[in-house]
Length: 362
Image (cartoon, rainbow, N blue to C red; front, side, top):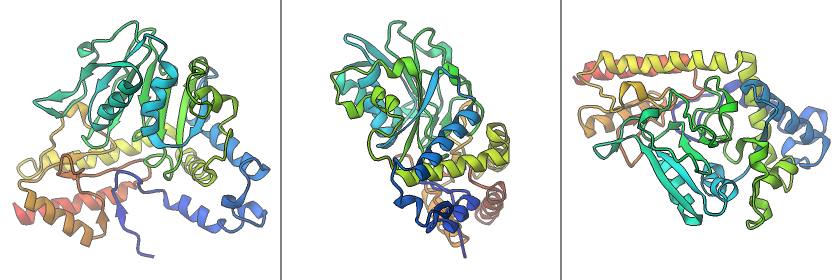
């Protein structure tokens, strides 16, 4: 087997032990004589997986009884539309903190069905190179909620502080940094995350929602789009993507075995430290466009002196077995997505390659 080091932003690399476990029991799930992917979503085999995935998530994030774990489809993009549809009452507006492409899309979706406004931005000279501080926000105390993207995969920025909105519920898109570190779930009304970066494969979205907010869902939207429907149906109101949930369960087991969210934070800081150290120590060749205080632990981005050198860097990295480092088409450059599953040893190998490339092309 010749596996590459996969720095893709999502779907992203998964832990090798998780893939091997799924491989070993793919044809026969726990002695049932068939694959989990063949089991009914209402049968006992899947019910066990479903319950364990939720329980592990509760344990690893220390989720209080006020909140519930839900599974939905449609990725984070669906939540751009569903959050305002469910949480914004008649005549209410919602606040959005703008930090990149995903917050731009979220605000645009919210405006389709009601009032929403920009309440702060990380844009500097036309580019998103930082996240705003609390003091820079213009929050409406009467807003239905305030929304922000905790980590910005394209821009390489991340919030390293909580947003304080007083009594206004905070909604967070944590698709790319969920479970990368411990968080205080009680500070959020709703957290949502597409699984395909830090939790598992594509096809399922995990929500952590305050139960009283879930019950706000108005009768004016279809039942299948109501958070109350998903809550009351235990995410089984229709046929759930069972295999992605099974894979999320397996990834959560792996995180638990390594020591939980605290261990993930130490692991992620080590990896990010290696890459940012390489950039800063070779600042005559590499340049990070993100302000230091806003640098992402999940998606470090950087530039080389010329676009041609960046193309050569990407090509030579691929030849060396390291793929997925090309920056998003909207910003260019290099992006290294180093989610929970990325091994520190693989990051170390990439850093040595980058240093060697710099020495050979300075």
